[in-house]
Each structure stands twice: as C-alpha cells, then as structure tokens.
Length: 252
Image (cartoon, rainbow, N blue to C red; front, top):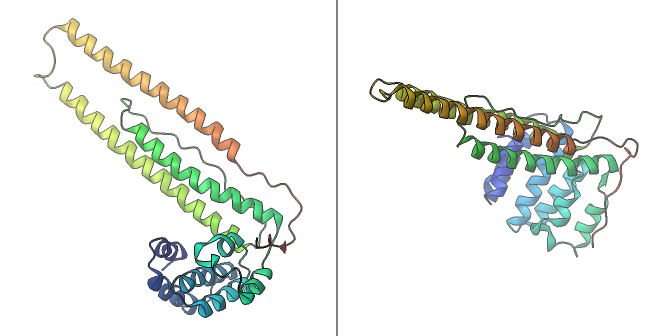
C-alpha cells in the first residue's frame, strides 16, 4: 500500500488499518529516506490517535531522525495537541529542522494541490452545459525541480504530479461524455422525421445550433485564458538562498 493510500486511511480514521499498513511499508523493503520519514510520521499520528502515546512518540522520534520536516503535522494535528506539555514530545519536536526554502515551497505545494482539485471540479461543472465539440484546455503549473532533501517537499511534488494527471484524465472523460452526447443529439436532429419540411425553419435551427456552439467555444476560450492567468500567478518561483535547515518554529 502506498503512502497516499495510507494517508487516506488516516483521513477516514481507520487508525488501526493505517498502523498495520505503515508497518508493512516500513518492513517490506528499502525505502528512500523521505518515504521512511513520511511513513513514521503517519504511524505516529495513528498510534497517538489510538491512545498509544509511547508508541506514537517513538514513531515520531524515528520520523524526525529520518528527516521529517513538516512541523505543522506534529504541532497542529488534534492528535498531538494534548502532548504539547509532555517533555518527551517537546524534546523530539525541538530536534526538527527545515530550510526556509523548503518551508515556503511546501506551503505553495499544499495550496496548489487544493487549487488543482477545485479547478477540476469547476471545469467538469462548466463542461455540462457546453454545446461545442472542442476539448477543454487544462493549464497547469510546472512542478518545481530545484534541489531538495526535504521529505515533505519530495512527497508533495509527487502528490501534485498525481493530482495533475488525475485532473487531465477527469476533464478528458467529461469532454468525451459531452462530445459523445452532442454527436448523438446531432444525429437525432438530422433524422428524416426530426428535420422540418420548411427549409427556412430548418436553416434557422441549424444556424441556432451553430451559434450556440460558437458562443460556448468562445466562453470556453475565455475561461481557459482566465485560468491560465491564475495558474501563472500561482507558479512557484524559488527565491534562492536559505537552503540550510534551521530549527522549526517553536510550540506556542
């Protein structure tokens, strides 16, 4: 089971299933350090949620040792809120390090993943009423490729890549359904019994259908241009420097 699937178990509150899955992942073969860090962090969340504080702190320590640097997980997660006064928890948290560059990129990646999901829903909804037969253009930000050793950044880049692939697939499926329906309805409209015997009336019908298609094609192009401008605004541009890890923000 992948890290993304296991994260889904956490979201569904299947904590016991998540612990079992993380254990299989951690013992099933050699993992890159970033994946090992993420797996121990997920296991820590699940164990603390199950009430196993000692086990959760042990997993948290392993995550930090492996380079886990997404401090909001351990600082802001409801499961860990009750541990803020625990000396062991505070000592482990104090070991966490993250570079300012990685911290900034992680925040932008989180935001972009949410934006892609929202854009996908919007594009599919817009597709439903379109009368043209064109395919939807899907603008996407390039995934950052600056050098990083951050476990969080590495994982989030992969999540964004998968989310973008899903976006293209889902929008294409929506297009295919719309175009297929339009083709079918066009065929029905051209059946002998569906066409008007009055050539003037039939010509007006054909012109109206074409006008509807042209209008929706123009609207789709305008929406694409607006979305492209938004995507370009969201594109992450590394500021350079500050790539050295520093202590994470302190607990409040």
